[in-house]
Image 1 (tube, rainbow, N blue to C red):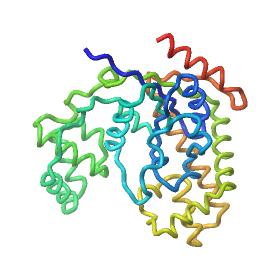
Image 2: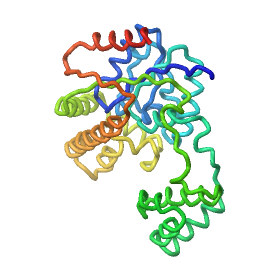
Image 3: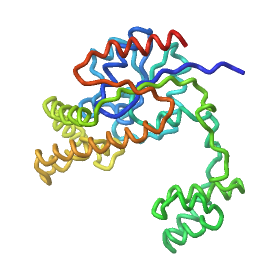
Length: 307
């Protein structure tokens, strides 16, 4: 059996110190950083995404930053393909970011999800939802795949349709199809996350938002708007961007928008923590902001050299 490629990862919630720690680790190991952030992939969105600065990117090679225009859409599967191509080229890849779906996509076999799609099947089921209602569509799923129906809400039409599509194409309910585990991943992941007290993390979130505003986040959003970007673009659903758009349109006062960004970002950090806490592969490194990160970087590098 071919030996799996070793991939390091520094993951976790926003504002938890991932960038600073990853630079120290990459410098020690001669590693190259692969962005694992669904917003840092866009050009012209540097401040609101907390993208590594030019100076930070100059310290070690960075990949998968700033390669899409803000009006382009991008899927998880597209990320997985690009990231795998990059991992295969880099001697010491270091994934850094907080987009859990990106990590999950890399943790699955490359052929997982290979059941194709059928436009006619999807169209038929969407028509049922439109004409008879989402409950009628959900009732069909209950008959052929009760387990998936119990898991999926009737309003989640896209996933309900996908479950029905898979059943129609394979004859096997989605809930009974074999689900891969981490052991089936094409990579040997070694994942780390900084473990901050919750109040300290939230305080860092608030300070980061204030710093973004000082750096010119409002002007960054204005430049994107004035360049013709639609507020409905995928990129503009990012925190800090969708809240400031109404400010530019005179529909919200700036202090209220800033408070909303902080609140939503804290909630987002909480959701990220919940996601990553479920991943048993991650080693959580206790850390208090203000403490040096070098000892933790040394620990990660020492573990890497031992293994």
